[in-house]
Length: 356
Ligand SMILES: Nc1ncnc2c1ncn2[C@@H]1O[C@H](COP(=O)(O)OP(=O)(O)OP(=O)(O)O)[C@@H](O)[C@H]1O
Ligand SMILES: [Mg+2]
Image (cartoon, rainbow, N blue to C red):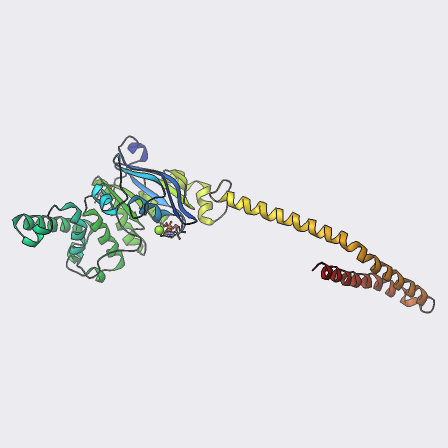
């Protein structure tokens, strides 16, 4: 298996395989993908990364016709794709799923044969009559499927039931099934999820080998080491918007990417407008609260007057007492403000009661 890498610079003149333009996907009030442009050229491995819920899988679903984008369009080799999964597969785009979707009660080989059906010409009658044309096509399909199983390292398990494969091998079987449709572009949604380090490394080799066969690759993954080793170019989605796109070095060094992953807000972040709006509304609410408090103080002022008067009266009383007990002078004068404030509280509550 070769592991040659092609730099992004070398592929900038290569033909465009995928051209997604202004792709937006809304679910009711939620915009999961917002105006995303992305191209993949021949010979490229492009990474799509972003925090959980960033819209990566939704974007894949828009590319493959599983969702009809609310806005935007997707072209494959210069032709706009109809948003129908089987037509997208027929055009030349194959994919794997974040949640493995295999026929668990079918054998490994049968699963790959299912992936082959878009490339076989034999129809219902041919299948029912099982004439020489059908038998020849069937043999050719099985041969091709076995080649693919060998390519991903599962040929020895061709007759095993898919459900009995370990998790990592199920992911590889998904790749073999996707390759069975002879794609020009392969979309991989988290191909190493749940894999150990060795399996991840083998998958990395496998993706390089796929690219070396002339198949462009667009891959979603959370494993940054895998992505930055593998990809000629990486696009970062955050809250449905493309934040940064560039070579692995550029993306790794971008502080906005680090911030997006660590959850630290930065200037101009998608969603920053909403945050600014909330902050402005909170500031406005604080100002309004201060104004209300000031108004309340003004309204309380007359109510405090009697309290002050009572405090003064209390002070007078203490003065009177001073004559008989000079030691208590300071104590009484200390009590006076307390009494005043207690009265003020009473006055407040009265004011509130009045206003209800
Ligand atoms: N069919 C749907 N209906 C409503 N909301 C959806 C639907 N599919 C996805 N979403 C929402 O769109 C947003 C993006 O989800 P998506 O699965 O695309 O994220 P992701 O980047 O693939 O995340 P992860 O890394 O966790 O797989 C999420 O808020 C999700 O809840
Ligand atoms: Mg996802």
